[in-house]
Length: 311
Ligand code: ACO
Image (tube, rainbow, N blue to C red; front, side):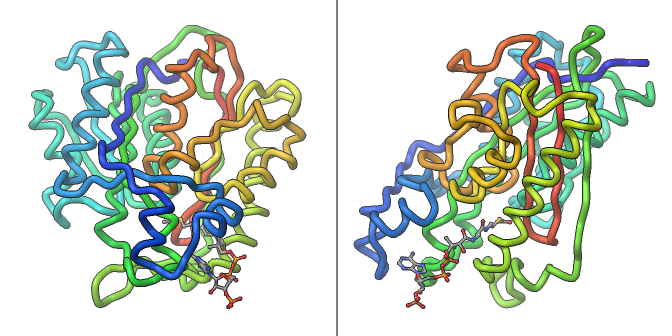
C-alpha cells in the first residue's frame, strides 16, 4: 500500500495588518470584546492583491520545499470560496503562472473545510496510482465578501494562503486516516448572500455545531488511525475562534501547547487557516518528523473534515 503524505509546505500572509484597534475606529466594537470572544488580535488584508496571487506565492514556496521538480507536479487542487473569477479557476491560473505542465487543475469549494477536502482528495488520487505529486492550496480573500458594516462578522475574517505538495512518503509516515462530512440543513446558518455574496452568519448556531463537530471528528480520525489521544503531538484546528479550538483540544485531552494557535495573528482565513498554521509550526520547529498530527476544520455548508497524519 502506497503511503501518502506532505512533501513540502509554504504559506503567504499579506503585509497589511489590521488590528482590533483599527476596527474600533470604524465599528461599534472593542479590542477587549474581540479578544475575549474570539482570541483574535489582528488579521491581514490582501487589499489589491487577488486570491490567485496569494495562492501563487504559497505554492511556489511549497514546491521549492518539497524538492519536487515543477515538471513532476501532475495535478493542482485549490480550495477556495473567493476565486478571482467564477472561472477560470484559481487552480488553472496558478498552473500557468507557476509554469507547470498542462496538467489537470480544479478548484474545490467546501468553505473553511476546503483544505481538508483537497488534502483527502489528493491522497486518494495518489493512492490510486493515477497521479504522483499533487499541489494542494488553501486560499481565501475573505475581505472580498465581508460586510464591513456588520460588526458581528467583519471582525472575524482575514486573508491568506497555504499550500502543500502531496506525494509518496516512506512507510510509517503520511496520512493515516481522514473523515469528511456535510449537513446541508445547516447551510442557512452560514452563507454568502445573493446580493453581494457577503458572509451572513448565525454565530450562536455555528458555534454550537463547531464545538461538537471539531471534537467528534478529531477523536474519530485519531481512533481510525489506530492511535490514542495521548499519541497526538499537535492538534491543528481551523482557526475560527479560540473558544471553539479549546473545546476541541479539551475533547482530545491535550494541553494548550499541543495546539496550533494563529487565530490571534491572522483571524479566520477560511480554507487557508489550516495550511497556514501547519507552516507556521513547521517554521518554528514545533513539528518534527515522526510527530502525529490531527488537522480538523468546519465551515459553511455546513461542512467538516479531519485528517490524522504522521509528519
Ligand atoms: N463587538 C462588540 N459587540 C458585538 C460584536 C462586536 N464585534 N459582535 C456582536 N456583538 C454583540 C452582539 O450585538 C450581542 O449584543 P446584545 O447581547 O446586546 O444583543 C452580543 O455581542 C452577543 O452576541 P452573540 O452573537 O450572541 O455572541 P456570541 O457569544 O455568539 O459570540 C461570535 C459571537 C464570537 C461570533 C460567536 O458566535 C462565534 O464565534 N461563532 C462562530 C463563528 C465562526 O466560527 N464562524 C465561522 C465562519 S467559517 C466560514 O466558513 C467563513
